[in-house]
Length: 394
Ligand code: HEC
Image (cartoon, rainbow, N blue to C red):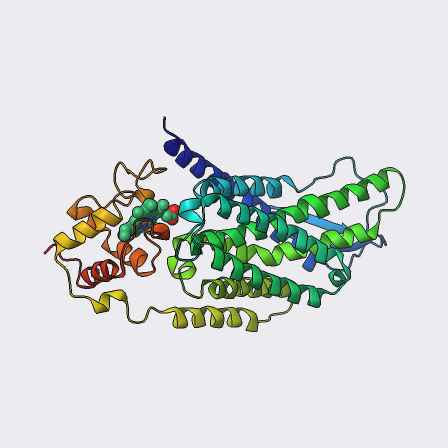
């Protein structure tokens, strides 16, 4: 079995795992943030109970109580929530390594942005990943960490800088995923390095009969709140590879930030709603941001408007030289075992069948990736003019 074939399977299985564990993680995260926001003052008189909630689900009634800092005695069995976070990161990082580091020449490097060897791109990517967490953690632990507003402003500014750098070093698609991987790493590290160790210290103190340190609880809360606002932006980034009009835009780093911001606004709307406030201006603002993006990002004069409609034979020649190395039943390009996304351009009927998808990819310059096959502007214009004319067979 050849390596490219196995790598496709690894890609699929890791992605599946990543989705499953990610859903489990985000589910618990949303659930507990919602629970915290909806706690009512406790009625049973235990001064350690800070709040409680009654709910009904799945045919049963639940009565939850939150202790601050902790109950008098630990129960025999305590449920922890960490493996969904760890496995989301493990599967996501493996996927990132498999695709974006393993094929850095295709997915990270774009000679139109910066032409660099694949290993250099991997080094920069790794340095950004590690540096992102270290920087974030230091700021949270500093004095600034006590001031939520300042911390939020610094976080947003840092994200802007990272998005700018990433989009000016890597190809758009790789740049987006780089920012997503950095954010996901911060979220998982929040669990592994701050939340869980803090909770372990709290439990250990109680087992020794000492009061747990309330600061551990506050830090854990702070990081879990950060995670909740990062969730929606990260999910957008993870689906963005399907939409070249976002990552191929000339202002792609602004698009990344704007959509990330609208995700955070929507999340904030739900957080406030859980607290009983109906801040409709938040989703309205998010909608306005996205509408502005759609309006400003609309393609103006496209390449296609500039060219005469070429003969189909010419289209076939362009596609054969610029696309078929990858988009064939048996790709000749190194590292490809099967036609990417099942898209093939070997026969006239295949070319016509995929004409609309071809237009999208060629217009946004998402294909060929990093222009590996050196398609010219004129050839792009011809392909687009042909699709605009209804993809005639002649
Ligand atoms: C170096 C290999 C390579 C070359 C050359 C190449 N592509 Fe692709 N193409 C890919 C890969 C990889 C994907 C899958 C991207 C992904 O994972 O989303 C893809 C996906 C596509 C898709 C499907 C997009 C989607 O998300 O459904 C279309 C359409 C496409 N390419 C068109 C073209 C056209 C047109 C050309 C030539 C102008 C071309 N490609 C040249 C590698 C290539």
